[in-house]
Image (tube, rainbow, N blue to C red):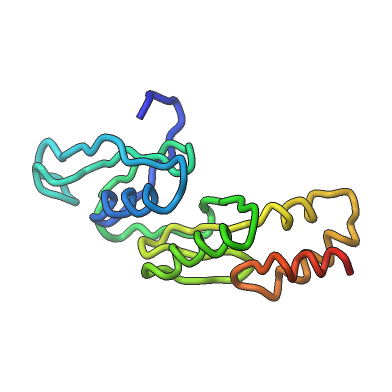
Length: 160
């Protein structure tokens, strides 16, 4: 990973390497970089065990820290993944939820490590951010009834 001044650091109990490999295998423009081992024993691991993993998720630089138990991910941080069609939406949603994750409402889900994701079709974002507030409300109201976003239902709501 190239040197950057801002990197997202995600805390994992002990499996940052497995999480980073899952992300690299699931999302384009994602990869696993350097794996750094603990130089000595510490409260969360033993000398030589994986301490941090450098990785990218769709071009966003991240570091996975094996910090040990007791720190939980929450809704205050999520990856928002923009999708162009239902097949892409389904692919990411099913990869996350189908591999030990959990679905939630309005296009949100959580992976098996507790990291939150928003799988958001661009048609939904365009409806929310457009100048037609009636269209925005219809799209929003339709989304509020969904777990995984159904693009056809959003498009129907937009049309009224």
